Length: 494
Image (cartoon, rainbow, N blue to C red; front, side, top):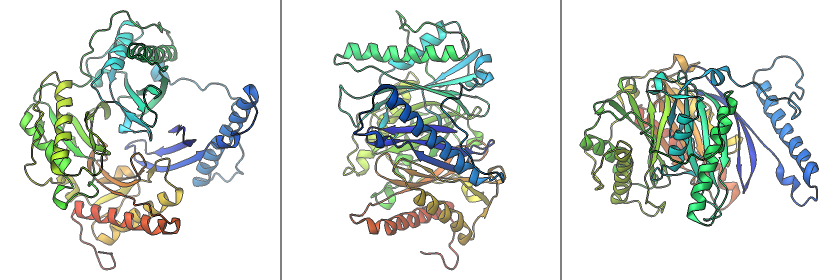
């Protein structure tokens, strides 16, 4: 999987992520910067500037290909193979032949961009507009369930929070996903034109959605209108919220930095208690028993909920607690209770119900799933890194995570993801500060079982950064050891 990311403050970066075809575990990541800053101050304009940009992109792409070639050498000398003069690659047949689609309001793998924050679902404008365009466009039919669809269309909106309104960029993202494997087949994005008046901003967002739908149907072989529908009905919920469905609640939050030991799993505890009180779903203890997986995560101080269909292993809905700030000084139990209550209210709203906004206290300390305690083998996935992470930090985290479980006397390291009882996903997040995160996943469903994370305290002196990185990684490994109930063997730092 190859993608390009960047923002106004960082150079664009090309990422190449190598995943296992069966479990989607990350096997290796590569990245190269597109050195656009070299153009700053130059007087080249028009075609001359574009030629320079194309050349820089070519260099970054060939660098990625060369890095991958060094990982699995073919014995031949590495030569540049990519040129922007190449023609357009063919569209996957699955897209051109698809007839039935399921529309989800989510992003694949619950991915977050560094400055483009996920918008809350209090406004359903983009989803309702896209649903009407696809339903009435004549190219696709809306399937009755994700499993009955040929494609899953994941639509989401993002706003650049580093720029003040009304100058903020609002972006429409669409990912086309294979329901059988959960693999992303194609992605599209469109920025809405800026506007001062709210009604104009609303129309511009709808037009951006219409442009995305136009591109999708054109890619699928039958172009539909790029105009905004005159009437837009409220679309049905993108998740099957039937009463009695089985749900597994996954704790992807990780320990909350700075919280007291008893409060470190508070988001999970409060959410679990709130779900039991709601009583709409049957809560199960393993992802393989569930119809849906409710995966909790944390952005700043705001809990997010990522809902995944277990059968197709694809994201169906992303929810975010609204009306909460990210003030890290607010770390009391009552503040997290309020945000979790807001998240439950969002879930109830999506199901067409009302939920009590009053925060529920936890019923007791959260317990890691039994699958963690029973596991004997683990596959260590190579770290997925953010824009601020260095290659050296990723390598150090991978080495430590690969060597530490053997010293616990608890796991054997599996050579492939499919042979493991657990997958340990590693990540260096750079969205709200820099965090090192380890997530245990079920290989069969890719569901999150439990997560731990530690924030990197960046020192004032650069020479002390390496010590701070080592300290953070050691703390992360200790957190992971506590979760799986391992006992360190001789030589392990306590």
